[in-house]
Image (tube, rainbow, N blue to C red; front, top):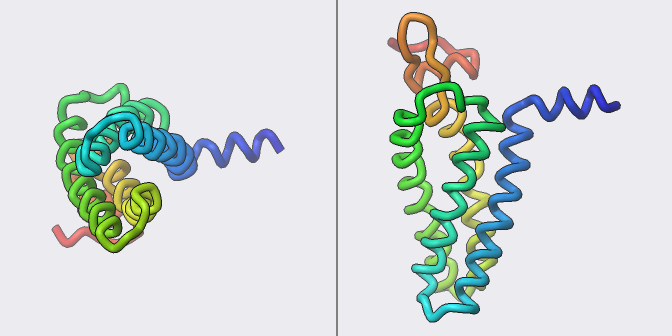
Length: 154
Protein backbone atom coordinates (compact mmCIF):
# COMPACT_ATOMS: atom_id res chain seq x y z
CA UNK A 1 0.00 0.00 0.00
CA UNK A 2 2.75 2.46 0.92
CA UNK A 3 4.54 1.72 -2.35
CA UNK A 4 1.39 2.58 -4.32
CA UNK A 5 0.96 5.87 -2.46
CA UNK A 6 4.60 6.77 -3.13
CA UNK A 7 4.19 5.81 -6.78
CA UNK A 8 1.09 7.98 -7.17
CA UNK A 9 2.75 10.90 -5.31
CA UNK A 10 5.66 10.81 -7.78
CA UNK A 11 3.44 11.93 -10.65
CA UNK A 12 3.64 15.72 -11.06
CA UNK A 13 -0.12 16.05 -11.62
CA UNK A 14 -0.85 14.63 -8.16
CA UNK A 15 1.67 16.95 -6.49
CA UNK A 16 0.39 19.90 -8.54
CA UNK A 17 -3.20 19.32 -7.45
CA UNK A 18 -2.14 18.89 -3.80
CA UNK A 19 -0.11 22.11 -3.79
CA UNK A 20 -2.79 23.92 -5.79
CA UNK A 21 -5.31 22.97 -3.12
CA UNK A 22 -3.06 24.28 -0.35
CA UNK A 23 -2.33 27.43 -2.32
CA UNK A 24 -5.97 27.95 -3.10
CA UNK A 25 -6.88 27.69 0.58
CA UNK A 26 -4.20 30.26 1.34
CA UNK A 27 -5.51 32.50 -1.47
CA UNK A 28 -9.14 32.44 -0.35
CA UNK A 29 -8.18 32.80 3.32
CA UNK A 30 -5.97 35.80 2.64
CA UNK A 31 -8.65 37.30 0.38
CA UNK A 32 -11.26 37.05 3.12
CA UNK A 33 -8.90 38.45 5.78
CA UNK A 34 -7.97 41.38 3.57
CA UNK A 35 -11.62 42.09 2.76
CA UNK A 36 -12.68 41.92 6.43
CA UNK A 37 -9.70 43.64 8.04
CA UNK A 38 -8.81 46.38 5.57
CA UNK A 39 -10.64 49.17 3.79
CA UNK A 40 -9.27 47.94 0.45
CA UNK A 41 -11.70 47.50 -2.45
CA UNK A 42 -12.40 43.98 -3.74
CA UNK A 43 -10.08 44.50 -6.72
CA UNK A 44 -7.12 45.21 -4.43
CA UNK A 45 -7.92 42.29 -2.12
CA UNK A 46 -8.14 39.85 -5.04
CA UNK A 47 -4.90 41.23 -6.48
CA UNK A 48 -2.86 40.99 -3.28
CA UNK A 49 -4.11 37.50 -2.44
CA UNK A 50 -3.53 36.34 -6.02
CA UNK A 51 0.09 37.53 -6.26
CA UNK A 52 1.05 36.34 -2.78
CA UNK A 53 -0.34 32.90 -3.56
CA UNK A 54 1.46 32.68 -6.88
CA UNK A 55 4.79 33.51 -5.26
CA UNK A 56 4.30 30.58 -2.87
CA UNK A 57 3.06 28.28 -5.67
CA UNK A 58 6.05 29.08 -7.88
CA UNK A 59 8.46 27.93 -5.18
CA UNK A 60 6.46 24.80 -4.33
CA UNK A 61 6.08 23.80 -7.97
CA UNK A 62 9.69 24.58 -8.86
CA UNK A 63 11.13 22.51 -6.02
CA UNK A 64 8.60 19.77 -5.36
CA UNK A 65 6.21 19.31 -8.28
CA UNK A 66 8.32 19.66 -11.43
CA UNK A 67 11.83 19.14 -10.00
CA UNK A 68 13.12 22.24 -11.79
CA UNK A 69 15.27 23.76 -9.04
CA UNK A 70 18.54 22.60 -10.62
CA UNK A 71 17.86 24.60 -13.80
CA UNK A 72 18.35 28.35 -14.22
CA UNK A 73 15.65 30.30 -12.39
CA UNK A 74 15.79 33.42 -14.62
CA UNK A 75 14.12 31.91 -17.71
CA UNK A 76 11.59 30.15 -15.47
CA UNK A 77 10.64 33.41 -13.76
CA UNK A 78 10.30 35.19 -17.13
CA UNK A 79 7.95 32.47 -18.46
CA UNK A 80 6.13 32.38 -15.12
CA UNK A 81 5.40 36.13 -15.26
CA UNK A 82 3.76 35.73 -18.68
CA UNK A 83 1.78 32.72 -17.43
CA UNK A 84 0.56 34.51 -14.34
CA UNK A 85 -0.40 37.70 -16.18
CA UNK A 86 -2.75 35.67 -18.35
CA UNK A 87 -4.13 33.82 -15.35
CA UNK A 88 -4.46 37.08 -13.42
CA UNK A 89 -6.57 38.67 -16.15
CA UNK A 90 -8.82 35.60 -16.28
CA UNK A 91 -9.11 35.43 -12.49
CA UNK A 92 -9.87 39.08 -11.81
CA UNK A 93 -12.32 39.25 -14.71
CA UNK A 94 -14.18 36.16 -13.53
CA UNK A 95 -14.26 37.14 -9.84
CA UNK A 96 -15.38 40.71 -10.46
CA UNK A 97 -17.84 39.66 -13.18
CA UNK A 98 -19.43 37.10 -10.89
CA UNK A 99 -19.47 39.60 -8.02
CA UNK A 100 -21.32 42.06 -10.28
CA UNK A 101 -23.93 39.34 -10.81
CA UNK A 102 -24.39 39.08 -7.04
CA UNK A 103 -22.12 36.08 -6.38
CA UNK A 104 -20.20 36.25 -3.08
CA UNK A 105 -16.52 37.17 -3.46
CA UNK A 106 -15.24 33.82 -2.13
CA UNK A 107 -17.62 31.79 -4.34
CA UNK A 108 -16.48 33.81 -7.37
CA UNK A 109 -12.87 33.10 -6.48
CA UNK A 110 -13.56 29.37 -6.19
CA UNK A 111 -15.24 29.37 -9.61
CA UNK A 112 -12.36 31.28 -11.17
CA UNK A 113 -9.80 28.95 -9.58
CA UNK A 114 -11.53 25.89 -10.93
CA UNK A 115 -11.47 27.25 -14.45
CA UNK A 116 -7.75 28.04 -14.43
CA UNK A 117 -6.44 24.82 -12.85
CA UNK A 118 -5.94 22.96 -16.13
CA UNK A 119 -4.45 26.02 -17.83
CA UNK A 120 -1.87 26.37 -15.07
CA UNK A 121 -0.85 22.71 -15.03
CA UNK A 122 -0.22 22.74 -18.76
CA UNK A 123 1.69 26.01 -18.56
CA UNK A 124 3.83 24.97 -15.58
CA UNK A 125 4.67 21.55 -16.94
CA UNK A 126 5.30 22.30 -20.60
CA UNK A 127 6.32 25.94 -20.60
CA UNK A 128 7.35 27.52 -17.29
CA UNK A 129 9.38 24.54 -16.04
CA UNK A 130 9.98 22.76 -19.34
CA UNK A 131 13.00 20.50 -19.47
CA UNK A 132 15.75 21.26 -21.97
CA UNK A 133 16.31 18.54 -24.56
CA UNK A 134 19.61 17.36 -25.97
CA UNK A 135 20.90 19.81 -28.56
CA UNK A 136 18.83 22.77 -27.38
CA UNK A 137 15.63 23.75 -25.67
CA UNK A 138 12.30 22.30 -26.67
CA UNK A 139 9.56 24.83 -27.23
CA UNK A 140 6.17 24.55 -25.54
CA UNK A 141 4.33 23.46 -28.70
CA UNK A 142 6.76 20.59 -29.29
CA UNK A 143 6.55 19.53 -25.65
CA UNK A 144 2.75 19.40 -25.71
CA UNK A 145 2.77 17.48 -28.98
CA UNK A 146 5.33 15.02 -27.61
CA UNK A 147 3.40 14.55 -24.37
CA UNK A 148 0.15 13.89 -26.22
CA UNK A 149 1.80 11.46 -28.62
CA UNK A 150 1.40 13.76 -31.62
CA UNK A 151 4.01 14.77 -34.14
CA UNK A 152 5.50 18.24 -34.31
CA UNK A 153 4.55 20.35 -37.30
CA UNK A 154 8.04 21.89 -37.40
